[in-house]
Length: 361
Image (cartoon, rainbow, N blue to C red; front, side, top):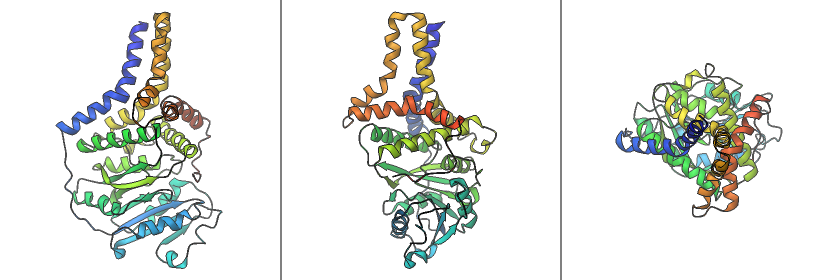
């Protein structure tokens, strides 16, 4: 019996990180669903929530205005979630006149800020961005071309990390998996730095929602299809501490959605539930399965418990075998796979992960 349990735990880990991506790749080749892309230029509303972003706000607005898109069809909505650094008031008059500014009287959280932006939006397409990342030229048009296909209700761009090593390896793995999922169905979520939804498919969020981009994009996907656009790229600045904080917050949001299926039932549909379970929720079980594997092996045959311990170094060992990945990068990857899910669960259950967001470097 212990050996059967060990086999089960090992199989779950292997399927989560190797089997499911391989299956998604096969589906992308055997069951392709091409998107009918063409130039599509509707009125667009860009929603940019900010909190104490300082000079980033000005830089982000200039970055948006530099996109090759007709100005008369572009609406920029900046929602200030109770900032205390006067970043909005300090905007140059020439830029302030280019945007619609909404200042919340107190901190309400990112979900509330996004709801305000959605209500104010007048465009047929709503594009969500963060102030932290810069968007490459042509990204907005690349996103919108996908909406020429009426089946498409949401589009996510790609996130390019400046970091190297394990973090960069993990990001490349994620982007490849999203591309494979998109080729035959819908990827399991969008990058919060750059994604778009049809106005008619954009949901209002519960204000206690942590992982807003997943809820918005997957709710829209359940009403049509979410696709991945690799030509639309947001650049993620480097910062290890901030990266870990964001990773913990993302996983806490996954735990919130998993533990409250009725509250977030809108994200589940025939075209999204399989990807959500395999891509998002099974990953949360990795540290539990690794512990169960070691415990099962120690009961069945103490002499081979070392094989169970080997699973804990599998991720960094694979990372070290990858060109450009350092020992530090391997440790970051191992932390992300084995430690972060447990810490994020503890933070969520203890209510340490607040809906109120913090500025990251």
